[in-house]
Each structure stands twice: as structure tokens, then as C-alpha cells.
Amino acid sequence: MVLLDQRLGAHTGLEGLRLFAAQFPLVARVLISGDEDPALAAAARGAGASGFLGKSQSVPALAAALGSTLQKGAWYLISQRLRRPCAAPGPTARQREVLLLVAQGQPNKRIAQELGIAERTVKLHVTALLDTLQARNRTHLLVVARALGLLLQ
Image (cartoon, rainbow, N blue to C red; front, side, top):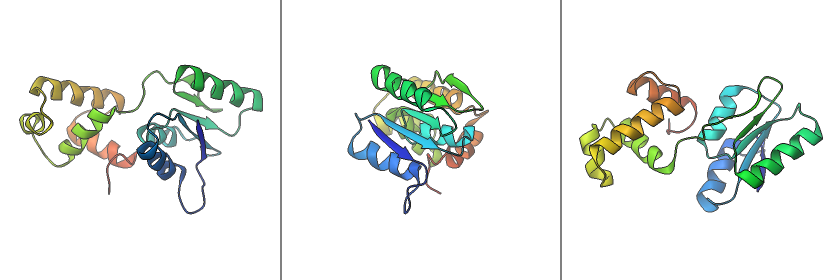
């Protein structure tokens, strides 16, 4: 497990999460921050975090959340604002591929051809992305994804 602080000096914790995810995809990654903003937690999830921990928690609560994350691979959002496990993980690797092609303005048919999957599967991935990122439509999906750092500016 890698525990990253949001304030890492030259890099943010979100950048660190992406770097670790690229090099060590099977290692659990948890972001810890004094800024317990749910948007930051969502961005961490989008960057591949296994969990997000707020620094306002007690040491026993942090230890329990880390232990649970290691054992179950579960996503935990622990903060004074929200004290519950988040059921849904961030977008899967395939959903991120679909998201990038949606961002390029590609229609479902072309995305399906590009990825070698059925058009219906693309629709299912887009629907899952809309649900995961709580977006109303494809345009809103891209706005939310950009704000969470899932798409380059």
C-alpha cells in the first residue's frame, strides 16, 4: 500500500496517485489530506486511489480504514463530513479509454471500432461513466471529468 499526502512538495497527491498507478497498478493507493472536500476525494478516486482519508480522524480510525482497504481493497472516504465507505470505485481502465474517445468527440460506433468492442458495450460504459461521475449527459460528463483531473486540460 502507498499512502500519499495531497501536499507532496513538487507534486500534488493526485499526480502521485497517477504516477504510482501507471508504474504499480496492483498496489493499493490511499490519499490523505487535511482538505476533506468531497470533490478532492472524487478526484482521488478518479486518479486511481483505493481510498481517501481525512486528517481530522483519530489514529485508530485511520488505522482501521487502512487495514480494511488492505484486506478488502475497498474504497473508503473517511472525514468529518462523510464517514462511510463509498460503494462505487472510480472509472475502470476501459471506461477511461471510452471517456478519452468521448472527449475527442467520437460517436459510439467509432469508439466501438477503435476499441474492438460492440457498440452496445460502449453505451454501457458511457452509462456507467455517467452514473459514476454523476453527470447528466455526455457534455456534463466531460465537464465533470475535466474538473476531476480525468482529462488533460
